[in-house]
Image 1 (cartoon, one colour):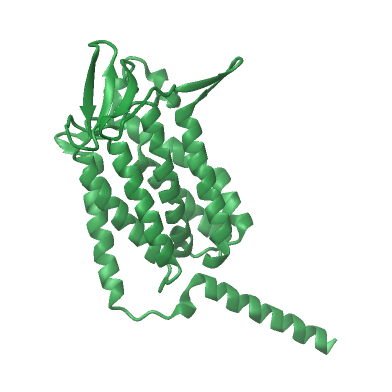
Image 2 (cartoon, helix red, strand yellow):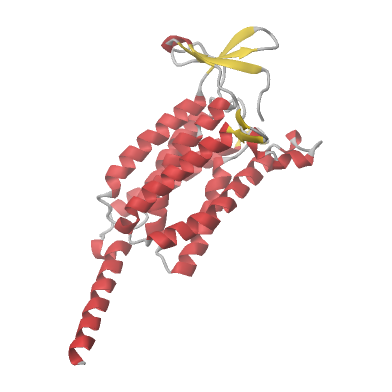
Length: 294
């Protein structure tokens, strides 16, 4: 939920002080920056995926079809996940569950929703799940890195009080005093950007389908597990931070599988992109042979 009593934001060690609005008014239309930033992140992720999809054996038309119906499902699941674990904030006014512009999208819910949609897409389009997840994982990192700045304009998802060099100051309009916190949204944004660069490079040397997706789960899981411990707005299940627990388990599981796969033999001919290329070449040769016979 948006803390309405915060206005100006500062990074005193960097000499930065800003007071970004939360929405843009265009006549009767109000565009919330939170949603706009998430939309920009999604758009850039899709543009990147469109440029690289052929390198994973994915048709661009299949990719765009998936985006059109997986995205709404992912957003719905992200909202549902958040509201379920923070129901106390909505119990008195359940209709506020629909006020998505106020913030409250849980990335794990979004990822789970997207993966469920992707599984169905792969079944319908006959795409190898590991190949599509490799490509989507890179898009996730782009979207997450940019999307976290929606938390910045909403003055949310920050961490515990601190006086560290990277502290973020929030001016409390009620008390008339500055309060300084860990800018956990910034930590996660930078962590995801670093992960994207690393996995983008590694994706050009893939040994098997699913390798980049596993790398994403390990990288994001590690960063989220560490950063979540600093946050003040974590979703809890009893005394346990839900996202921190999921991040730790998913990271450990992904690292275990990566290590196991490291010692297994892999044939690059088994990559989906190479299977598609071989099938295309075979079809072309068969067509040419039929034309020759005629």
